[in-house]
Image (cartoon, rainbow, N blue to C red):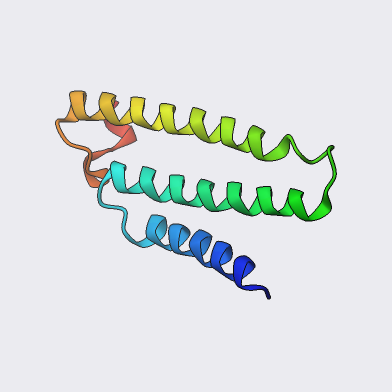
Length: 98
């Protein structure tokens, strides 16, 4: 395993573990998701550079576009949750109360 592959894999795993074990606030969950998407983007960009093919060159940009859409949707949900519930703590959110 190359050092670059190890660093991107560990960054993804750390983001996944942060999302799994530290789910107190919605903002921390969104930051963990963004860290995971950033590590996937860099890994995919380096993967396309290794193949030196033009057919794979649009994949990192497509992933980055989906990541931006995910971030904007997450922030919109964060603002809506903070306005309706007064906090962004995930324990206060209950789908049965909607």
